[in-house]
Image (cartoon, rainbow, N blue to C red; front, side):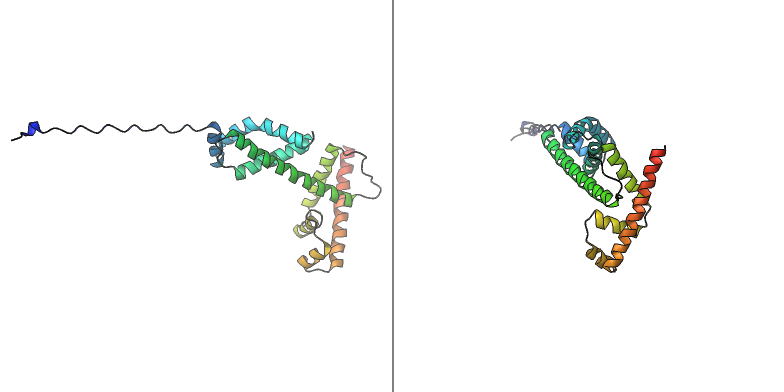
Length: 208
């Protein structure tokens, strides 16, 4: 008869070795933090990519620093809205350049619309310079922004639809329930108001 002592005691199963977690890349850590809205990640991103993206925007803007910085600010805004995790830095940079080019293109279109509107407001006696001056161009855009800001909301919407969105007078008449003649009359009045305000800003600048 087998005694209890003679019964072999089963050996404990060997502990399973846990595989180490795969190391996360610095780019993955950074972009995960950005996607989560972590402020430290945004500070790190700004420190690491600000200069690189500014140089990229300067190339796109052909050296126009004002335009480059405006496009850079828009690029950072788009990063904050759209960022996701990237494991590879090359893929992340490629994505950033797509956002940068898009921001630069949108800025260029916006400046073109502003120039077109400013041209429509230019008095016949005020001739455009032979060569564009970036600083003067920027100031005129600022004066136009200031002039638009004081318009009634419905008047500003009408001007922006006509000159920024390229809506036709017929389309505006249908949208606002007006005759085409009434729309043209309002646009004429608003152009005069904007022109007078911009000219006052220019005169004030010259007197300072």
